[in-house]
Image (cartoon, rainbow, N blue to C red; front, side):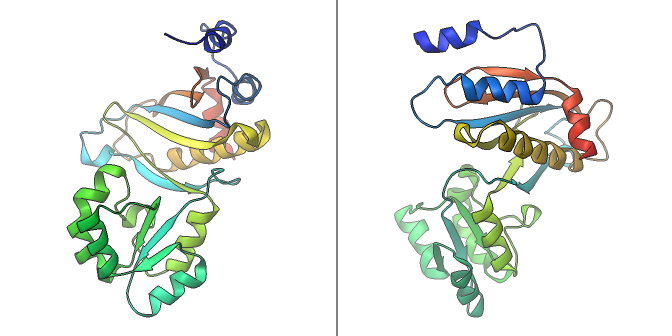
Length: 234
């Protein structure tokens, strides 16, 4: 049963219209449904078939204003690259010993994993642990790289990964309600631009079917399709 506050907020939404992005985000900022600083999420429905390998859209983008949360970064590397990762501000750095810790203790006190290519053979042993949680390093999103300093700094600055789900929808956090409208709009447009750039060559017709924004505990608002064109032009 939805709470009174939630029902009051929902009653203010016009379900028959699509909102300009700025107006939709302003509504979420000004109409909280929870007492904590909610995360604002962007949901983009694509006209793709995720079952086809060439239409499994994925990528990453550094949000201009970050995510609003402290990202704990684990770097799996060897030798000099361990020192490089530590100097860049990684929270945890190591090699076989940390892989073993994850494997044997199910240790998961981190939010992002970066690995150098020369250790990926060993990282494969914990794929079944990291994969379902979206933590497995992948060269397509820049988390398998020898440039660990850049990868760590981007993760700390608010780099987010996105991937289309089985329903053809991409869900991406774009910040906290406390960011305010302007920063949330800029983060949202950065995400939309990245999704547009990730369009597969095999995608036919109208690539983006719909866009919506919502808060952690709040309702979703449909966004005006023209916002996608604005993001493309940015």
